[in-house]
Amino acid sequence: MTLKKYILIALLAAAGLWGCNDDSLDAAITVDSNFQSGTSGENGWEPGFAGYASTADSSQLDTVAAIALLPRGLDTTQYGFRILSRYSKGNMFSYLKKRVSGFTPNGSYEMTLQVDLATNYSNDSAKGVVDQVTFKAGVSPSEPLTKLVSGVYAFNLDKGTGKQPGKDVLLSGSIASTNRDTRYHTLLRYSNAPVTVTANNRGELWFYAGTDSDYKDTTIFYFDRIIATFKEL
Picture 1 (spheres, one colour):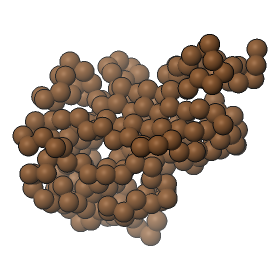
Picture 2 (tube, rainbow, N blue to C red):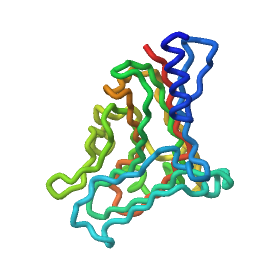
Picture 3 (cartoon, rainbow, N blue to C red):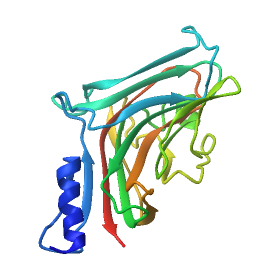
């Protein structure tokens, strides 16, 4: 058995979410999270919030993150990861993160990423939401974390500020749907071309997806599906 084929089989066994065509040494490796019900509905994704002051109280700050049935306008028999956030005093970054292991340590991979984000905001929505909330997603060899820095719970990766993406952001864009009604619709956000990523020395990559918001009121989103596809270089 070749080394590359062994790696693919090991990934499949270890992650439980990987799929490959065993007939080809050039087969793609796929991580596919759809957040369905049950004890593993989170698919290994963990929520986090960043940007708020350590002194923020419940009158200023509200955060909720949990698996929930999708809302009306979508398939209400299916589940997604629901994120609610409100921070009345400044910027809030609300995100999910996931560790994937089994890569070749320090190995390089060609990757494409797709995130299905469910939102009921449109270009006709209150401009405060559409203009002040930006979707962002990325991949890093380092774990995305919220750390207390000078009295603020800050995000440790370079996500950029507001609509401006940082160096650790792969996908960035509007949270507005092209549909004009107020029902929820799924937005497909995906990389237009493959990018090269490098695993850390433990053979890991970390993914994150979230919303970077300067909006001072409540926003609610559902992550419906997140798919990453890799090919070892």
